[in-house]
Image 1 (cartoon, helix red, strand yellow):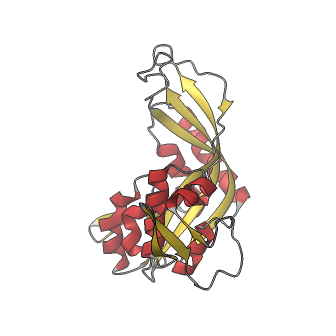
Image 2 (tube, one colour; image 1 turned 120 degrees about the horizontal axis):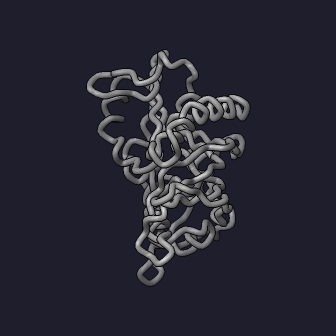
Length: 253
């Protein structure tokens, strides 16, 4: 983690894009900042490898940045992994401020801090789409915890136009942590320490503040990695237990 370099990438990208106006760039700013943070040399950006374009390619290593819907990467990763080591980089909003854009006037509201605080555990449901590749010896997942400003259009279906609204852009402000997952053992760090020795998906959801569906999806990822196992049922719910894998030497977040 290099907080100073991340700040420099934020400054470089946001200065260049401010002239275009917030709301015209989709969610590209977050992607661009991360790319310049990971590799400042633009000659390593957007490199064709086989039939696909890699976000970053350098010295035999590929970095792919995906801000959501990781399942879309699967075919691309399968192709890249035949030749090189690959790191999937996934940003998580550890904190954010919401700014609303009036579609008619273009005016923006004052930033309001969102009460939501996300941790690395929130990557688990997203990883479901590439769960079959997570134990590949050449694949790593790098989670970036980022404070950001989120710009949303007032175009939703509710009376205040906020529910169902579109996100126009997410502007990174600060890098607050990183977590690198390179082996099944590393994923033990995504299991909350407060769980009982035997637990259900409801227990898992409660500890992490997840929805029941997200909890079940996340547990299926850990199950595929051998980090947890099913040992029975409690009513209609599966009962899980953490497997005795060797944990990482240190907590990285």
